Amino acid sequence: MDTILGRKPDYQQFAPEVLVESDGPIRIVTLNRPEVRNAVNPKISDALADIWRELGRDRDAAVVIITGAGRAFSAGGDIPTFRTGIDDREVRRFNMREAQRLAEAMASSHLPVIAAVNGAAAGLGCSVVSLCDIVIMSEKAFLVDPHVSLGLVAGDGPVASWPLMMSLLRAKEYLLTGERIPAADALALGLANRVVPPEQLMEEAMNFARRLAKQPRQAIQDTKRALNLHLIQAIRQVMPFALATESESFLMTELHESIAQFEERT
Image (cartoon, rainbow, N blue to C red; front, side, top):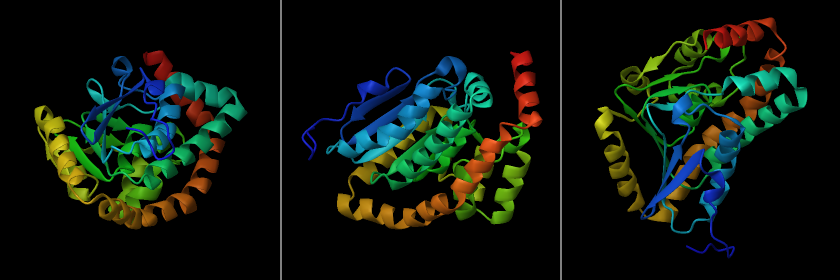
């Protein structure tokens, strides 16, 4: 598993919050904070941005599957991270830069990426799904981008990717209202490729991954790259403004009230 650069990928650096398993040429990336529905803390955020470089070093890898441990794909950013972003401007600016880096890293990865969405994919979790190449959802899963409802500008992946996948009008509907998109609706809208019973999700994802792994590598990788040039262009045009204004949202009372209400409930 030596790389062209002479060193092996180091997946252990991301554990235990993000686990990487190998099944032949398939790499299975699991968000691993099931006790909090895989909410994204700084360690997961860093891993999600950095792991694509390690996957790029892995000469034996042909396909990536990303999923969540337990009953959720990811509930999005955790409350302590939001609170730190409110209180510390430099942390907030860093987080916005990292969001841009994550989107560009995923969209630029040469490996086909399959999302196996086992449950709720909210906020940043929804963003990660929107940046994958193939999306397979459990019948019990749903997508939701609640940024606006919380008092934040929608600055992550869906603001760039969703208008490429469904109509601009529908993208506006779901981003402006924060309405959940159940699996069946995601399929109809073009946000998912397949919807299966929960117990069949990983089997379906593995079968699809094996099918892609059999394709000629240069042909599949560069075809993905050609298609993703549309997405990369959208990310680079849309997200700098969206993230800059999302950063401003952290100064607004609406977000502070939303966070306070959530903290009271927990």
